[in-house]
Image (cartoon, rainbow, N blue to C red; front, side, top):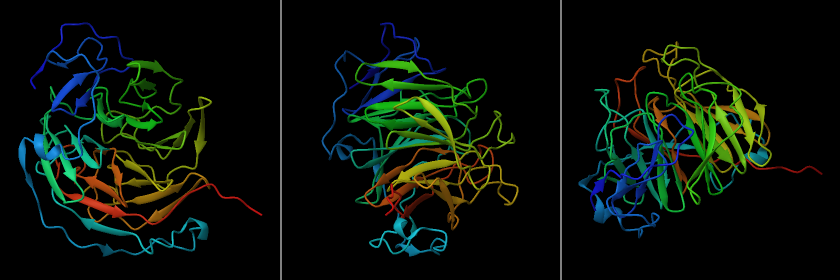
Length: 367
């Protein structure tokens, strides 16, 4: 199905740039873009979910598969600091492994999951030339394919899936924020100055945006996840460049009351982080701006228990990376594809790391 540019006007978006949704019949359809919308030619009905086997029918390139290493046990968390109630007896240890490499090296891209697949959207390789590429990973068979490209090249997007549709939001120059889904709505926060306080919500069912009370601490290159009805905005940096000051601030928004509150800060300030929720815990990986490594990339892996408001330091990542926005927790594993291995934007990689968590975080009762 060809992709074309619609002549019909679009309703304004509160974000500086726009967003798109992936029509799962191999085309892109628009949602509000402030006058810069794209639509699959002749299409006006909503996007509809595809059959589970569809990626193998509409992939544009042959799947590239690399042999994967077996699961390797790593040093477990310092159990003296982890409450017994937070340990899962069915998961005796946390483990890392390297999975099939990305077909195309990438960083400053967004990652999301949809229908059991991992999507890596746009970004740029070490050339720092933005791409339209959309890469799809099949965890069951440990293989990649390249599917329908975006209508335009972008980097620093955020992606989220709602109702069988993948939404791609934002892009340079004001991007660098995060996104998370609560219920059937997509929340977006932060961005490069002067958009660092931005906070808005998109409702796909009505195709509308609403501007929400400002993110208290302006920042970009942050981590953002949802746990229940609460949103967490984690770390980041204050300025536009990677040498700007980093922050350890963690702020929580109760989407039911619309009120912001501080949570316990990260153990170490860092920007360019990636955050993924698993079993009620929030895992924060990597980041850039480290003065303690030769690469300038943080190897840190920390986990936050939102019910105890407490952080735990975990063993470092096998390959420290930054420039990955969002992630995928599918089955029992967190997938962390691509990312930059050196500070700055000129080191997009094809490395694909997977982490199998075993900690659970949940509300606990006493008595």
